[in-house]
Image (cartoon, rainbow, N blue to C red; front, top):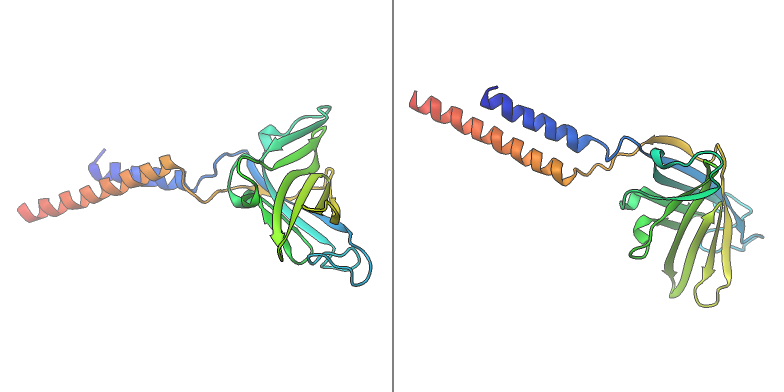
Amino acid sequence: MTFRALALSFGVLAAGLAAAPASAALVIADFGGGVLFPTGVGNIFYGMNRNAAPYNVVTGSIVYDTAAVPGAGTGFVNVSIPVPNANAFAFAAGTQLSIDQADLETGATAAIQFKNGVFNGVVFTSDFSDGGNNYQLNIQGGTWMIYDAQTFQTKASGYIDIGANGLTNIRPYVTGVPEPESWALMIAGFALAGLGVRKRRLSAHFA
């Protein structure tokens, strides 16, 4: 193999690794749900109300490893999200609330929940502040609740669509960020390509 071919091989290999997903089993899926409280005309908390869209709409997405999905008869199983990226989990309710995995406290992890191998919601807890008030979003399976962190008063609550049709638009998850090994290969490929160009220039000069 020539020096030029070797350099090209390194470059192609590095580019392929950089574009590849972290795991062939990783997928990202969307889920939906709704707001149950607050209700009543004009009773809106943080852009949420049961009685009118878009105030009563819940949307989200979550990454999971299909190889880790439990089988039938396994009961309730929580499977942690396998990547730390902020976009590996997202939850939005009404017109103002939008929270993702980056909002988790240090050391905490979000998880997807299965019941006998079927999607049963999400497990996630996150604090957030607004207007000097502190709140907590708590999602347990197919139900979610927001309460005042000081008074523990429920400010909003709702549900996540669960079951066999609870997850939609399932597609491969690609991080878009090269792994350290991929960066090393790309740098090595660029270096070899540069040396090859320099070698050809020197050869042409002394010919």
